[in-house]
Length: 566
Ligand code: PEP
Ligand code: MG
Image (cartoon, rainbow, N blue to C red; front, side, top):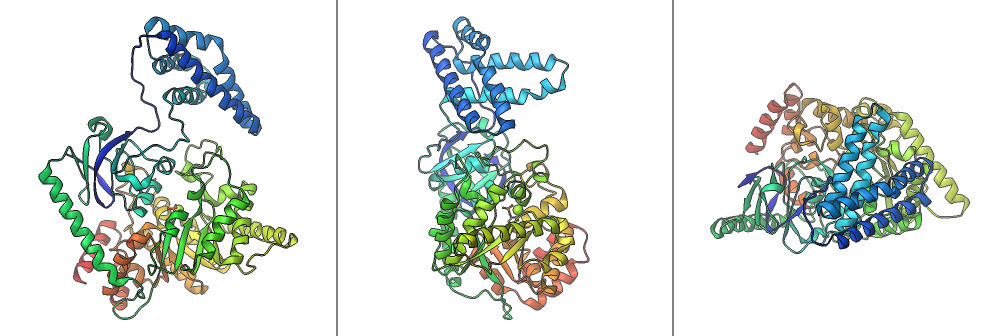
């Protein structure tokens, strides 16, 4: 049995499918017919060359230069000859011959006393991977075929990897790396797929098609489980389903504490399909529409018209009264294939969220115009991610104004009074929240990032996951300050980070007087039940006690005691 940390609860049983991302695993294989193998290599090489030429024809200057240099390396007859010789004389398979030849190129480069050349090794890896990908016929854009009841076993699952999978057929995910707050874990939770992360050597121990059972409560992973243990897990699964059924009575009810304090619950949604399959009576609004997830698996930027049709469908949904569309939040652990971003040393501190949109106005305005046009058909609100200073808010609002003016000139309808909000997810935004509140219509606290930036722990990095702590008193104080600033300017304040559905934190949020929480649809009924057992007055007293603490562990202990008493 293996063990890891639970990133998404549930019991999952199925056959293992290994997906090794990042570096491609190449086995040393010998071949019989070197002629066929050489032909296979040349086919892969010329396909890669064609792809590169295609990219060059559309690329901007800097990218064009890099890609042209790639092209020259690939067209170098010497390189092809050396690889051919490795296949012919050592009987290596084409993949291994490519890997070997590039290895020797790296060694040569690393021996050169020139920093610029050394920095080029990354580009060489790219070329090598492109050729090997072609050889393995696993194009990056390809949707990976997943049979029903599959357990994905991988070293690391990025958000773009997840976008390639048919989630309906996945019964569970096991990863070696990762963090419960990475975007891929969040997406898995939304889809109720059990996930266990940090399972050491999972891809080495588990074999393709092994019969795997995941206990997404304890973090245990059973390989080729016996019938008896499997039955125990199935019984546990049934019990959980029964508990879920009992929660049905909270559907269509107002979310109130025992003493009548109301808090609004809205939903976090990432894809149109989630919105289409929403059950009625769960919630009236969407508090966070992660718009970037719509564009993850595209090959080019979606046009304004394409985006407009999506937002219009969202706006016209009769069961949903209002939808907060968060503008593109790309960068960090979210990359778009069609947007070739420069590699950054610290992507989470780099060109992310609103920064990226403000530095790429075509991208930003295309999305804003699509949202504005759709706002004519229903209650849409705009929310900017990653605001860290007031100038960003002002600039972003000015771009909205420009878009409005351009639409007006073309006589295109939009909601002139569309509300604009800010995600509070950077500590500097909290510290100027009094000012921000005066210049926007609502706040939504993004705890996933707020915790990351407050505690200086990367949210997807398993090595620091213990320090990434939602109960840290600093985080609680920042939440308090944000809510107070919103109250002072009489604007609503919501929370859309994962902490908003945390059983232990809910009394604190109620005690602090938060207006709204935006959470994953599958958590709504459970959260309603917890809130119905709370009393506002007791929660307020609890906050007073918590605010005097300096240790996250202490906070967690007191919150646990409190919840056990209700
Ligand atoms: C957050 O940071 O809390 C948030 C809701 O946004 P995301 O997880 O998409 O960064
Ligand atoms: Mg965020």
